[in-house]
Length: 229
Image 1 (cartoon, rainbow, N blue to C red):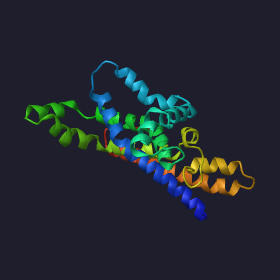
Image 2: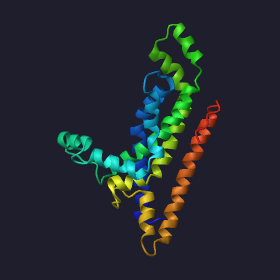
Image 3: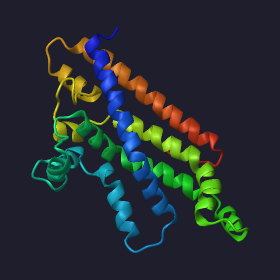
Image 4: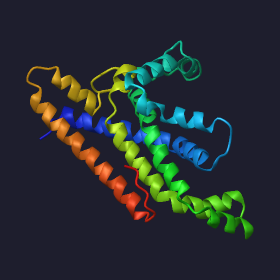
């Protein structure tokens, strides 16, 4: 049975993961659309930059975020000057780190879904007088929707497990940035914390497994052989 403090950690993790996915969703879909349908110079470079967080050590990603969002950084300085806010040592910063790490998986799943839509259907709609927006809204978006949802669920699972970039960017602050992975790490460093590790690790496995299974079931239900795992 979880203690109130441990339930708080679970709630914070779900909050960080949910906000990260919601904030990341339009960006991920826009990039997926651009990579699936766009023809422009530098497409390979953009594809590489989108997937960079998958191969770069998470600590490096967290350090780059720290440089960008620090008070003297280009984004952090702008936020403080115009809005008087800072994301350092805040749960919003943890959500930003989780979103950056989840973005590549979301883009990949959505891109596969968009590429699976038969272009002849879009072309047929255009020949019948439908504009680009109507063709997108009535054909492309509904047909690719299962992949978009699957990508969002997969991104949520990745956000729940985020550790390296988060601890580098916003540190491990109990009640503010201490999500499940960080709490497990802190409990491992504490004498007698094995029981807490066991409980939180079990919750982490259950949440991640549920998200992965849900993502795969949604992708299979699309019926087009889309597999994001």
